[in-house]
Length: 265
Image (cartoon, rainbow, N blue to C red):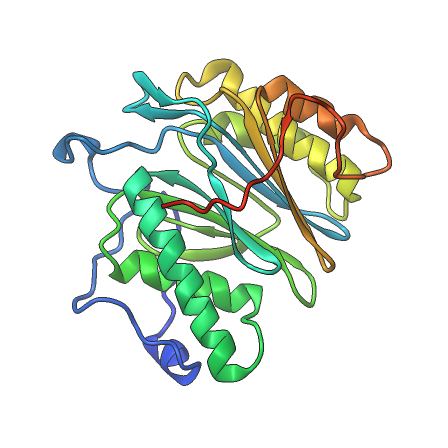
């Protein structure tokens, strides 16, 4: 069972952020509502991973979108989206929920920046994200939010809106397989070059057995200076890109799909 941590509405109000929704949703204990009650919706088939390193954070996700883990509907889905200059979120669950959530979170964080003349911290972004999930109309959505401000941070945000600060996190149907790989390979304060390899390998491990994960990989590397997002046409290419011992996130591999300016719609 996933632990839930409720944040008081007063925090949001004093920060100039208004709570979302007219009624309070009850917290859920795992990935969300029974998918059998939601026809035509995507269940939490996917694998996303995030981890904290010495100088930044890394997020990775596969690129397969499926219907109930049984039918592949898209092989080039991007499941990691920047929501601020140095903050990004990886999501699993309903495609429509994820698209709406990302737009809403970006708007909330931009509004915070305008009101306070300063960007929201990663902790604030996670708190707002949890409140949106808890109070909004999102039915199937699990998140891993990561970023860098005073230091690198990763937050796991469950289907009921619970927010947990953690060294590493995984979500989606392949999360158990990914956690197994992380438990054996992750160490605190890894340099980014090693952290990228550990996170990418965790996603690869999940795709070996989870039928709802695969078809490519997206890797986001976030430091105090930049947020770099790379997309790869295959999971193997994503893992191979992390073999660069220098930690350079750039790639001359022709199989790398460059990031576009297109946002989720």
